[in-house]
Image (tube, rainbow, N blue to C red; front, side, top):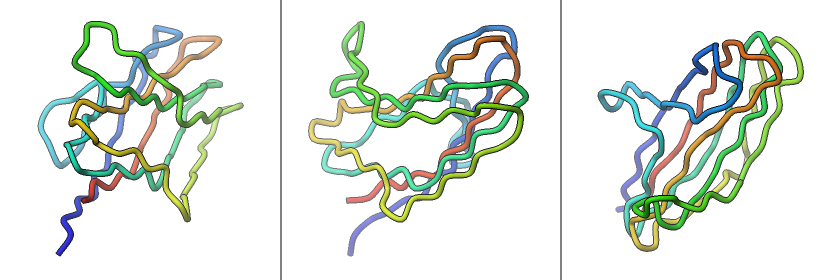
Length: 129
């Protein structure tokens, strides 16, 4: 039987910077993290993205093959833009899938804004065999 875990991740901008990496939190773990590491032999599937806020915000999902190095190389695997105040909800019939081949792979979510303000991101991800 295959193992699978659905995680609800959420983060918010600090309201004073025009760019940065989201600190992601979840009801499924304590504290917050700047990236989600994919266990070896597992797949991470991004099923849903929700973006909301008061300002125009560019959201990028980045992937790296080795998060353990001092300066990981991040490749953008998803981009969304909240053009005006409001909310975008994007549910996928086919998710974005990234594999944990070595166990060093990870995803991170960054933002950039023309004018600093509060914005929020929520992701529904599945980690499965």
